[in-house]
Length: 325
Image (cartoon, rainbow, N blue to C red; front, side, top):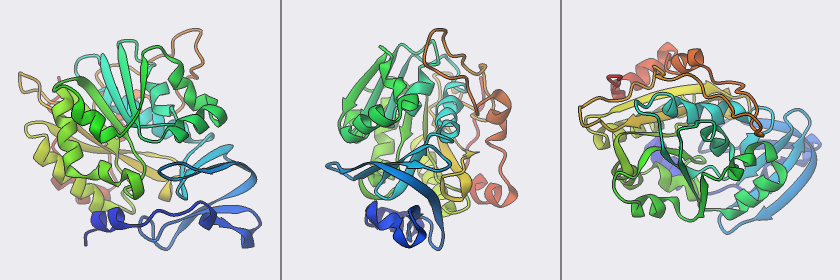
């Protein structure tokens, strides 16, 4: 099987299996499918929550160095110390690249609220849907991660606890300017978010000129998966663009996470070039809970598509660059 098929076929990991008593209270993120032969470990000072939803194991602990940490099925989803790099980039790379200012946006997944927090910085957004399958993630995030879950407080946000694939499939054709898929790794309930039928539904739900950005894994570990997803997107977003970018984040595998970004062509045949922002970074409205941007700026936007040579050689044959405005 391919790397992508092996990941999708892998079994979910329990959170308890990742707590190593022999290391005196360390949590170790271990996955023989996603990152064989290595682990990311954080010192735990207190377990704040342990439970099981209808879909996955959920845990929150206080760490020694990274603040509170959210774990799903043994995998680090976010930490208070470094979550902003991922959340800012997955939101602002597409929303600062799209030709027309975005008005209607959909987030699939993203139950911690961090991506919502970043999208609501954009004043042109009038309507923001989120489709999150696991209501327990939203509940836990609102209790333990107010710095991220503040994204739910904006009146433009409409929360749908449901199957994200069905939500996208039921959307009228051409509904959204942007769709952002903030998914877990392709193991367990998130595996279907990396498959062709879902991407075809997204393509249908986007307006002409609309953009998709999805969590795109780590170029150090998942080059084959990234190539498969880009190749699939080229076949779906015909006449559009398909690009890859990345950011650094210490608590994700190998300290790096990427983004697959696609656009539909406009009526005039123009496509989005995700390596060139067309508007400045959004400014947090006054009298809000939103902190200043801490990772994203226009220079880091352009740098996100500049890959080291081994990565460029791996993904460039599958990239379709946009035309720009």
